[in-house]
Length: 180
Image (cartoon, rainbow, N blue to C red):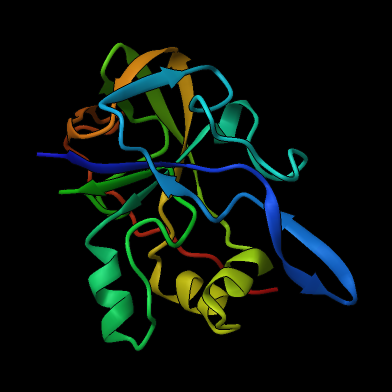
């Protein structure tokens, strides 16, 4: 069973400086304490993106990440906790090798669809203080996935999430990228 452990939202803030220029990001998110909130076609109520040319929009409205991966990151020497990778949803009971693009999730009144895996950028390295986190995320396949919103609505901030696989009965390949 897939379970929603927590929901996170954030607004753009100064993350640091790169090449002498300020870097704004909403990767630093706060856990939502209220029992539910609104989900629009573009994002959760209270969540924003600093650079909508590469983050957010209809195909990246919500970022989901398996909570179990944090145990693996800590075993690999990273000091991280739920929400540190900028996810909106921390989920348990599901991982990338089970999820396929096109899978539909029932979340409260809303329906969302897996649209693409995350491709990490330099802001994750800035957030964690570790330049090696980006290649490690790519190499391990512990990337999480983005969701598009098919039906907006009010969503809970914890509890079960319904899942209808687009590829029922087929084994999902592990997502991998090659470095170019």
